[in-house]
Image 1 (cartoon, rainbow, N blue to C red):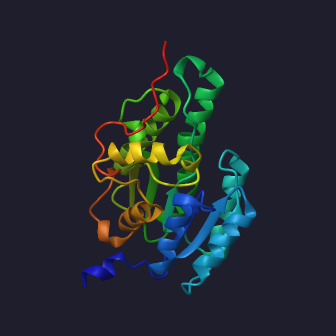
Image 2: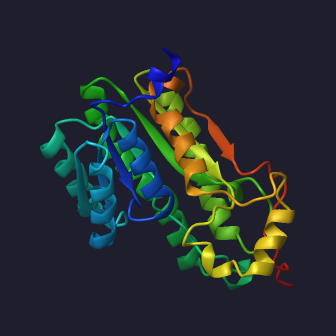
Length: 261
C-alpha cells in the first residue's frame, strides 16, 4: 500500500527546536506516524510538553535539553538518544533564526552568529548523527531552511545568507552521503509561529496574505507534513533537494518598508 510508505514504525527521530513551532510540529507528526522521538531545545518545560504529547500516540519520547551552539550539548543529545534507543534514523535540524536588521547595522559578530546558529550547528549535529545512521539501516536528514535564502529582501542579509548556505550544505551532503543517508531541506515561507507572531498585527497579516498566492500564511502542519514525506520511505528516491513550502511566493511577502541608505 502506498500510504504504508509514510509510516515510521520503530524509527527514532531527533528533532532540534522541538519545544514549539515547526520543531514541535515535526516531532508530533513523526510520533503520529509511529516513530519514537527525541525532543531537543533549550527550554526543558517546552520539550517535556512535546514529549508528553508524542507519548499520546503510543510511542516513546524523551526530552533532552540542548543549546545547539554548545558542542558538548550536541554530543550529549546524540549520546542520550543512542543510550535510550540504540539508533537514530531521522534528524531534523530545525533550531535557528536571526531577527531582521539593516545590513549597515549588522556587525561582524551578528553576521557570524547568524551563520553559526543556522548553518554550523546543523553541520555539527549532522556529523554527530550520520555515523550512527551508517552503522544501522541508513537514515534521513531534514534541514529547515527558509525562503529568505532565495528571495531578495532588505533587512535579511545575515539570515538570508545563512539560510542560503544551509540549502547549499543540504545539496552537498545529499551527494556525499547518498545512497544510505538522504539529506533534504524545506525552504519555509511565512509560517504563523511564535517567532513571527510579534510582527503579526491584523493589518500586517492582511498585507502578507495578500502578497501570498495561496492567500494565507503557513501553518506548522504544512511544514510538518513535508518533513514527514522527506523523513519517510515515501521519499526514498529524493536527496539533496530543497522543497519550497511557501504558499507559492516568488517574491517577498514581507510588508515592511525597506531601510533607506
